[in-house]
Image 1 (spheres, rainbow, N blue to C red):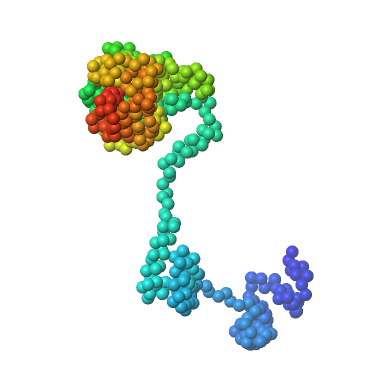
Image 2: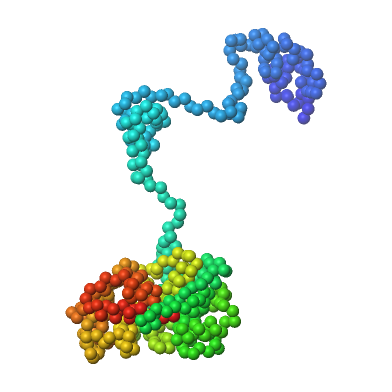
Length: 471
């Protein structure tokens, strides 16, 4: 399309065509036509009229603004900061400003009111003191919250998940303390450096009426736990960590000494892996052994797999009590390691601590009888053992704090029936303090105990509790 055909729809009076029949394309790329761009032609680059003489031939009042005004410049295009909006200052009476102090402290005033109040606070001391008091009160109503996560959040999430979807093979309740304490100790071992595995640790326990100790290292303590846990592994048919290493006796101390002697070099952090693997195998095995029966059927059968005997050389414990014993020793020695490497370490959960205290209280009658047979304790007022099932003298053991409770300890015979009517003494101990006594870390004379009643019976029980300890 070219020439007149391109503009044939126009009448020649719309600014493109011309009344004289001149084709505007004839001047495309050439000099402007003189008639249409001349000062007097009535046409210009901004429409009709002459821009150099707007009063001439523009067809409008010269006092009126142009039809297309020029764009105005904005402060936003200059890069300068925007001016602050001007606030009209409020003039308020003193009583009104004083009434606004509460809203000002809560940041609930309008900008004008805020400006008026703050100007007034600079000149009125009484209102300034009141404003400071209100701001402090607002701070108490809205205390700052820590951004740190709640330490108990992980446990709550895990408990919620297990409540929604319980494990297919749950861990027996009597094995849960061992599972928890080995996991805590493993977390501690993960945080220590290579050099700290050789930090000196002193194992402490009681033999007879005297304290004794054995010096080792952090790695040596883990090796000790590995070999003694191996007694439970043997009872469950698992591999013995000692292997072919001979031990003089099947006692915890003899097995530990045999393992230490068989090591060509002092134990290092490499002992952590077999200890952790054995702990996992023990928990998994007891879970499968008890997983096929409910708690009710297990109780009816007298404990089910929990009754399996575990030999410690000089004595035996049922599997359920042996797992509690291993949890207790794991916690005690984890505390020894934590002290050696300057690491914070707390007691077990109250539920698990209560189970450990209960085990110690149940073992006291047999320990007291063994001490009398060995001549370490007097026979007491009764010259003959009380028949099994008959009531006899009793001591009330009150444990305060975490895992607390009360236990009646028969004094005359392990088979005697503890009776409140025959109570001759009352001892009060903190839960952690009792466990430290049973671990041989606190002497009976230094135990912080409230004592009422037969002093001889109290002394026998406290020494019997210390005799529960061993290497």
